[in-house]
Image (cartoon, rainbow, N blue to C red; front, side, top):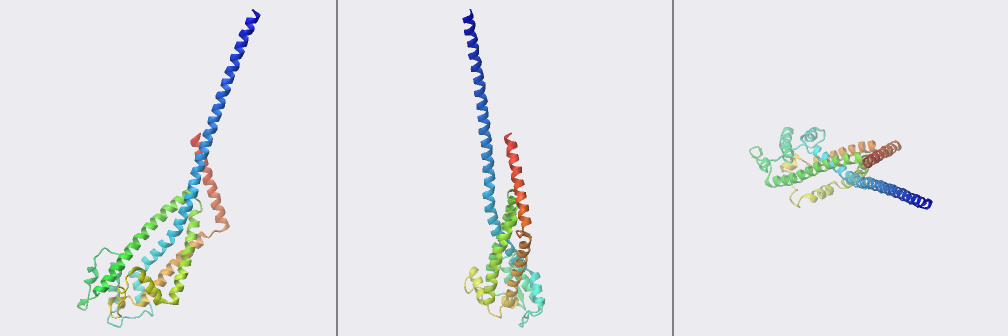
Length: 293
């Protein structure tokens, strides 16, 4: 009787140990599963954080490349306008025509030439212009202006596309890399300033060679040279192109200097960028933790 009771008690004791062991094993599995889930969430979070970190460097480089080009194209468009033409024709020291064009004639026909570069009109827009009963522009002049029109329209289209991309890059950087926009604009302004200074030196050392070299990049030899009696030279003399170059360089220089001042990496700006980036990462970590909760 006592032995049977002892055996039964032992059996119950063994069953108790088996049950307790099973509970411990289940709890261990739960802990390991929770640990694996936490590690997976941490890995996903780190991967998500690492992605933007490497990605925003690419965006900064692209923004640094595209921004100054957009500024340059915008300056070209501002100078290639009737407003600049009016300023040129009325400024002291600008050479007169000497062959019959009055200032009003120059404004009328010169503005028509500039308008043609950006409108959708065909070549007859220029070839049908009349002066003193004859055709104003020779066919060779109309052909060259058509070539210029194609270059300008492509340039403006590229400028619009790059401007849109810059906006997209800025929005992305504002969300993923605090201070990234400032660093990109600062770097872009610096490299364009170097290019601008080099071009200015070349132009000062030899304007004619610089002007010819620039045209040879876009136009075939012999298609952009004209006589002093041709309408294009009378409307847009050499001084006009020199002033246009100075105007473009001045607008770009002013814009880049303002950008450099606004984005200069001062200690306060760098500190604020680090704080903002730390806060961004903290909020993103909190979001990932909340998703895994």
